Length: 600
Image 1 (cartoon, one colour):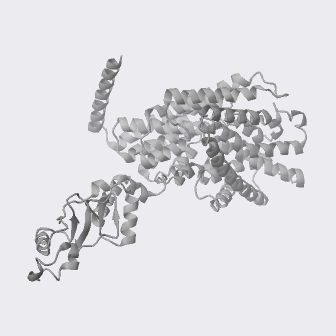
Image 2 (image 1 turned 120 degrees about the horizontal axis):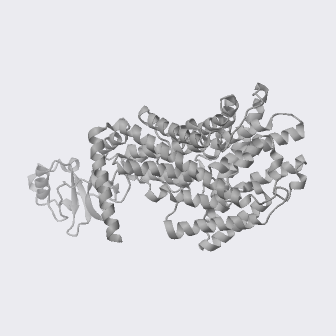
Image 3 (image 1 turned 60 degrees about the horizontal axis):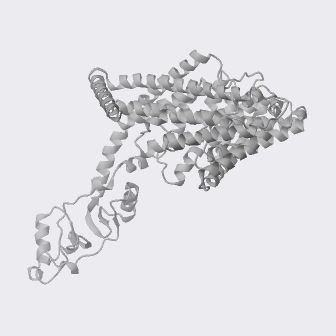
C-alpha cells in the first residue's frame, strides 16, 4: 500500500514538473498569475459556498424542532457535542493547530515564506462546520479565509512560483473567500490589503480583483440574492443625525477595547488548563449556559443581525426565558445589554475549549447589536424617533474598524450590503471615530496582537520582513589572518603584508577568541624594526566591546551596527571565533533581498 502511494506521488510530481516546464515555455508569468488568480478565486468561492451551506444545514436540522415560545435544554447539550467532535478531529486526525485562521496567515507570511500546510485547504472547514453547526459562538469567515489562502499558497508552490507571488496567491484566496461569503468583492480586496497588508500595486491589484470578482460570480450563480446579510435602506441619512453616528463610533470603539482585551484574557485562562478534556467540559458547559440564557449567542448570529436590520430587536427574545416580556422595551434593552457583555465569553469559551472558528462574525454581530442597543436606549429614554436599523449597520462598520483595525473593510463591506452607497457618509464617520477611539488604547488589532506579543509580527513592517529573511551564518566572512596569542609584532607585520583586512583576530589553539588587533592602532609600530621580536600581539590586542552570535537574528545585528557605529562585528559562539560580519555585506545583501521582495 505504501509502495503504491509512493509510486503515485512520484508520478504526480513528474506530471507537475512537466506542467511547470510547459507553463514556463508557453505562458508569460503575468498572464499565468491572472489565470491562477481566477482558479484560486473560483475555488475559494466554492469553499465559502460549501461551508456556509453545510453550517446552515446542520443548524437547521438541530433547531427546527425548538419552539420560539419557550426555552430548551438542548442548548446545553449541542455545543458540547460539536466541540467534542471538533477536538477529536483536530487531535487525532489533523494533529495540528488550526485555530485563529487570520493570525495563522499573518504568521505564514511573516516567518514561513507564505507557505501553508496542504491540510489547511480542508481541515478548518470540517472543524468549523462541526463547531458552528452545533452552536459554537464563533464565525466561519476566518476558517474560510484560511482555506482560501491555503488553496492559493499550495497552488502557487505546486507551480514553483517565487515568494512574492506565493504571497499574492495567499491574498487572492483571502479576497475570494470574503467576496464569496458576502457577495462583496470590494470588501474582499480591501480586507486583503488592510488586514494582510499586501502592497497596493497594479501587479497585485489586478489578480486580487480577478479572484474577488470570480468568487462573487460563483456566489451569485448558486445563491443569487440569498446572501448572509442584506440591508434595505428605508430611512435616508440626515445631517442632523451626525452626532448620533459619532456616539455610535465612540461606543463601538470602547466595545472594541472590551472585545479585544476580554478575548485575550479569557483565552489565556483557558490555555492555562492543561487537561484538554477538563478544558472542553468547562468551555462547553459555559457556552451551553450562555446560549440557554441568551439564544442569540448560538452560532454566527446572522439571523439576529437580520432581525435588527428589520427593526425587530424584540425577536432576539425568542426561544428564551424572556419571551413573555418581549413587548417590554426595558426588558429588550436588558437582554441586548446582556448579549453585548456575554458574547465575548461565549466566543472565548468556544475557541478556548477546542472549538474552531473566527472573530469576524462575532465582530459584525457585536457591532450590529451595539449600534441597535445604543439608539434603542436613546429612543426609549429621550423619544428621538430615529431609525435604529441604520445605526445597527453603522455599528458593524465601527466594530470592524475597532476590533480588526480595518476601517475601510468595515466601510466597504457594510456599504456593499446595502446594494449602494447611500449610507457611505455615516459609515465613514462611525468607522473613523471608532478607529481613532481604540487606537488610543490598542496599537494592534485582535489579529496581530497575539503575534506582536511574541515578537512574530513582521508582515506590517517591511524592514523587519526583509531582515528576518536574512541569515547571519550566510554573511560571515572568514578570510582574516588569524594570529596566536604567542605571536610577535614580526608575525603581525607578516600577516598585514598578506591581508587586505585591517582587523586581525587573536585565537588560541582551541579556537577561542582572545582579542583582536586593529591596523590603525599599530601602524606607528610597523616601521620600528627593533621592536619586531620584543613586542607581542597580546600586548596590543583588545577584546571587542560589541560582538554577535551566529544564532542572532538580523534585527539584532542591525541594531548593534547602529548603536556601536562599527563597520565590522566579530562573530563569537560560546567564546569561539567564527569570523566577522561587515556593515557593507549586510547592506549589499539587504539590497538584493529587497529586490527579491519587490513586486516589479
